[in-house]
Image (tube, rainbow, N blue to C red; front, side, top):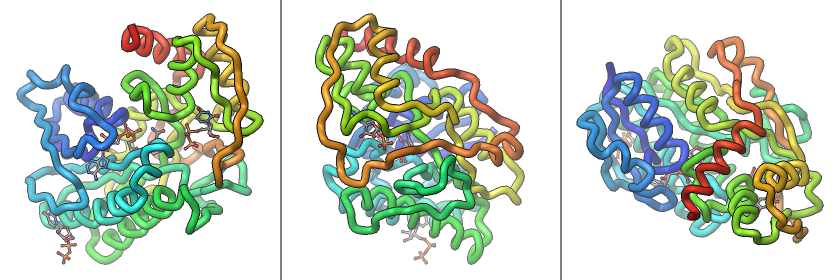
Length: 311
Ligand code: NAD
Ligand code: UDP
Ligand code: UDP
C-alpha cells in the first residue's frame, strides 16, 4: 500500500482517481487550489481516515512525504484554461517542476496527465504516440497545449538527468459524472442544454470529430500505467477510439434525453482541431487495457448524474 499524492484531485478526473486509489487500499492526499475543482467532488470521502485534501497551488513548492504522485492539476476545458492563460502555462510548467522536484527528493514514482492536445490540429489520423503534432505556439489554445508539451519535456529530462521513475499518459476526451455543469466541454454542455430545454450549441458545422472515453475506463488505464515496470515511461495514449462528429453527438444526446431542444450553429473557435482519434495499440499491449464502455452507455450514466444534479 502506498501514500499517493493526487494534484488536481478535487476535479473531475482527480476525484474518480481518488475513489479508485482508496478502493485499492492506498492513502490519498489531494492538493488542489479549487480553480475548477470543488470540495464537493470529494465530499463522500471526507469521513475516510485514509483521505486528506489540502488547498495548494502547484506553482508553489510542496513538501510532503509520498510514494507516488499523479499530477493532474490543470484546468482542462478551453473556456477555463483561457480565462487566465498565463496561470495555465505556469500551472503546467512550474507545477511540473515542483512535482518533479518533490518526486526527486522523496524518490516517488510520478505520472503526468498529458493530453491529446499535444498533437494539436493533427494531419495524421488516428494519432499514434510517434506523431509529433501540429500545434500553434502563439494562439489561444497554446497556453494549454504548449504548457502540456513543456511538462512532457520536463518529465523526460528529469528521467534522463535524474533517473526519475516517470509515466506520461496522453488523455483523449473523457466524460462522465462529476463534470461541472458549467465546465464548458462539449458533452456536459450538450447534456445540460438538452435537460434544460435550451438550444444545443454546436460550434462550426458540427463535422469536426472527437473520440469520447468514459471516465471509469480512463481511470483504470491511468492506474495500470502507474503500475507498469520502471522501464515503461510512455508517452502512452489512453482514450476510446470510437470517433463521432459533434453533430452525431448532439443527435445522440437529444435522443437519450428525449429533449425537444433545437440545434444552433455558431462560429468555430480559433485553432479548434478538426479531428481526433487515439491509436491505442501501445496501451492495449503495454497496459493490457482497452475501453469497455461505449458512448451510448456512458452518456446514459452521465445524463442520469446531471438529472440528479439539476433537479
Ligand atoms: P478539471 O478542471 O475538472 O480538474 C482540474 C483540477 O486541477 C481542478 O480541481 C482544479 O481546481 C485543479 N487545478 C488547476 N490549477 C491548479 C493549480 N495551479 N494548483 C492546484 N490545482 C489546480 O479537469 P479534468 O478533466 O479532471 O482534468 C484533469 C487533468 O487531466 C488535467 O491535467 C487535464 O489537462 C487532463 N486531461 C483531461 C482530459 C479530459 O478529457 N477530461 C483530457 C486530456 C487531459
Ligand atoms: N520542490 C518541491 N518539493 C520538494 C522538493 C523540491 O516543491 O520536496 C520544488 C523546489 O521548489 C524546486 C523544484 O521543486 O524549485 C525543483 O526541484 P529540483 O530539486 O529538481 O531543482 P532545484 O531545487 O535544484 O532547483
Ligand atoms: N463544442 C461544441 N459546442 C460546445 C462545446 C464544444 O460544438 O458547446 C465543440 C468544440 O468546438 C470542439 C468539440 O466540441 O470541436 C470538443 O470540445 P471540448 O471543449 O469538449 O474539447 P476539446 O476541443 O478540447 O477537444
